[in-house]
Length: 179
View 1: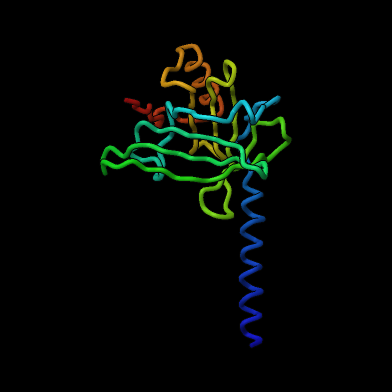
View 2: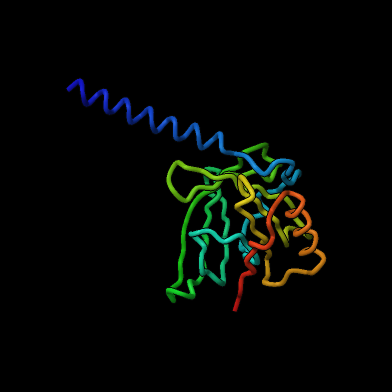
């Protein structure tokens, strides 16, 4: 009986440590600021992923999109989707995001796997929330998003310059095909 209590307490301690550590991971590349006067309500809706750094969850995806909707509890429902052109099937993953800084900062944390959150930093917004540059906790995560599949050259060059100055290796950038 006592052994079960020790195991349960150990499990709770590990879970609490995981939650605490996930909160500590709310970082971004050094020298990079987030959008101030950020309006989560304007950010909601559909976004096309125009460029990204590939990682295993998005590998071989085209027609990638993200949809953000506000939940009753103030969190944001996140639905990411795309078409895997190698496996020839549509993929959808659901998660949730929360503001991680002040309410007017483009600093969020997003989770697709239970209590574990990753930083989601909105670094730049252009137009009236028409284009966004998003970075993760380090230079392994980068996304260029737009409300349409078109990115004006001036916005593209500005976003690329910002990413380059933040230390991103732009040779890793994958330009997403939308058909």
